[in-house]
Image (tube, rainbow, N blue to C red; front, side, top):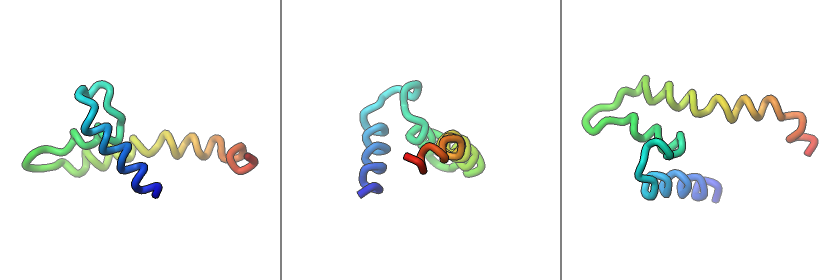
Length: 68
């Protein structure tokens, strides 16, 4: 179920949002892929930058989340 919810968030942002300026970061990573070739190191770096803030927030607020 969670996979379906996450996939729908990603899919609808790709379909409905026309401007790259307001597209979510996870959908913006899709624009790093080219039509004929993909720079995988660039995609990997973007994915890492997208994953760092939620992980950092989790570790900073871990004590409150567990107590919660």
